[in-house]
Image 1 (tube, rainbow, N blue to C red):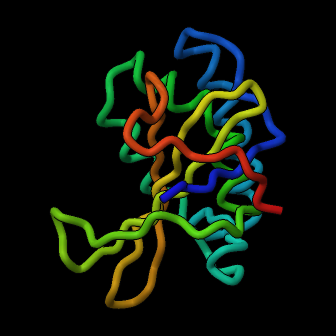
Image 2 (cartoon, rainbow, N blue to C red):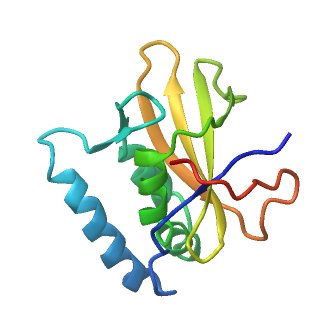
Length: 151
C-alpha cells in the first residue's frame, strides 16, 4: 500500500543553530497565537475545519535536546501547511501508550524534497486534537510515500 504525501509549497526555515531557527519559528507561531485570546490553534481541512491545538508541540519540543529542537523547528512552516490544507487520508492508529487516544500521521514532502510527518493526537472521549510532529532523518525506509499533491 502506497502512502500518499502532501507536497508543501513552503520551504524549511533556514539556519542550523537553535537561536537562528527559534526566532523565525517563534515569529510564525506568534502570528497564529495572536488570532485568539485563549489557546492557539489551526483549522484543519481534513478534519472538516475543526481546531488543532498547538500547545502540545511546544511542550513536546521542550523535552528534546537543542539539536533536535532546531531540526524540528525548521519544518514548522511545512507542518502548519499540512495541517491547514491537506485533505489526504492520514495513517491512523490507536496510541499504544494510551488507549484513549488516536494518532493521525500526515506525511509530507518539503519544497526541497525532504520527507517528514506531522502527528496529530486525538482524544477519543471529547474529540480534542493536538499536534506534534517528527522528521525522518534518512527518509522513510519502510513506507515510502508517493509524491502526490493533496489539493
